[in-house]
Amino acid sequence: MRKATILALTMLAMPAAAQERGLLLAGACQGCHGVSGGGSHGIPAIAATHRRAEFAAILRDFRENRREATVMGRIARGYSDEDIAALAAHYAARD
Amino acid sequence: MPIQRRALLVAAAAGVLAAPRLARAQQGGGRLVILGGGFGGASAARFARDHHPDLEVTLVERSPRFTTCPYGNLVLAGRRDIESITFGYDRLAARGVRVVHQGATAVDAGRKRLRLADGAEIPYDKLIMSPGIDLRWGAVEGYDEAAATRMPHGWIPSQQPITVLQKQLEAMPEGGVFVMTIPDNPFRCPPGPYERISMVAEYLQRAKPRAKLIALDAKNGFSKQPLFQDAWAELYPDIVEWRGASEDGRVVRVNPAAMEVETEFGDKVKGDVVNVIPPQMAARIAREAGLANETGWCPVKPATMESALVPDIHVIGDACIAAPMPKSGFAANSHAKHAVACAAAALAGRAAPPATYFNTCYSHVGPDYGISIVGVYRGTPQRLEEVPGSGGISPRTAVLGERAAEHRRLEALYADGWYESITQDMFGIA
Image (cartoon, rainbow over all chains, first blue to last red; front, side, top):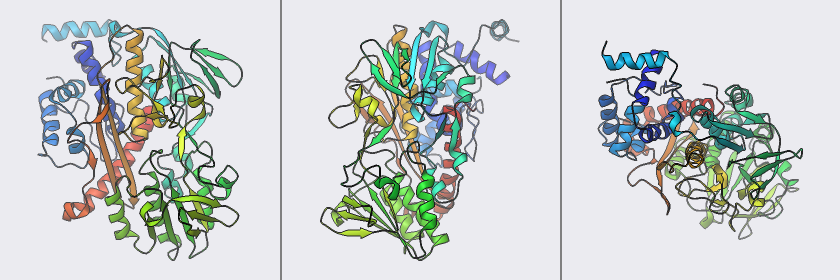
């Protein structure tokens, strides 16, 4: 409940277009990490698990091949810095 | 407590927030009608209901139960029960989607109405069509609906459950031959036939180890080809034989009475079980509505998934032309979310959001052995293209070295996670 509230507050504070960008990009994450980002079957949880800067750093590490991956490297290489920031804003815990 | 946070908590307590829905300023009311309750349509209904509360959302789907194409090959191999890949629409209805279990017979694009089998009409402001595919009966000579009972396709669960093919496979004699024919591109689920080869081979190895599988393919290359071929050589070397077009693999004729298929250059191949995956096209209602072009598939605007031919209609999923994206469930789910966002934006008089689409397709090739292909795509008014440097297939075993077994094990596990996540998403289960 608290996490959901914080997520809601974070989203409320963002410009609508950036918020929608995060939501649409997150649509892909949901395909494996679950609708709420809770993970399952060895797929890690991503919702409210890291602060925003950490979340973005992890995605950049996947993108730049600095972090061991099965599929996430291949996915993250499709993301711009802006995409990563939007995803971090969508999923990350409050800074 | 910092003042800003206190103020926001007061706002939250006052019930201002209905997150994670989008801010109300972004909303525009309207009637969103979605045709087809598969990976595209069900996902669209869920997403619209969750994030666009001002839209009236109606989902029209003939059948009260939906069996997925993904994981059908695991049912075929005896690793899954068909019930475990079959879903209803109750949870979507409980979330506020108006679910209408009627066949749709026509689209009246001029009056913006969807006509149903019972004669009723559903008016729409925006229509999202996710009607799936039809088989091109007769495209392989002799392969018609009657032939499909002897030589099952197992490619459209609502028309022929995978259990039809499964029963034939189980009844196949020891030392028998399973023949599969595979069409040229484009078709639903590009890695599907090759996952099926793998799953049938796994079953044969376990249950009928002297049996053979002969796959006759109308093309020379296919999705995840090096990974599948490595795996077949490693796991099923005495069972699987795949013949591409250059080895006379293109089947042009079938003879169901003789349980025989014939290739382009006249080679006749007899099977104890014959699985014909025929050429395909967009489902009839989309073609009759004038949404398809001469290819039989529906061209769309890459930035919005709107029909390139008929206004106020989005076409998503397998029926649309979204190359280089594959016709996959994940792709349909991705189209769906973007199409809903674009339809809602148009109704609210806003510009469409930037288009990014995704695909992740896992295939099971053996126990604890999964592989994948991934793609990230951008849609602009001019084209749909893969983001350079992104995506691609799992590394080959030679590249992975000693990490290979763990990599394959994880991808098989993640495939199960994907299946659970996406079905929970589309059917509103979680």
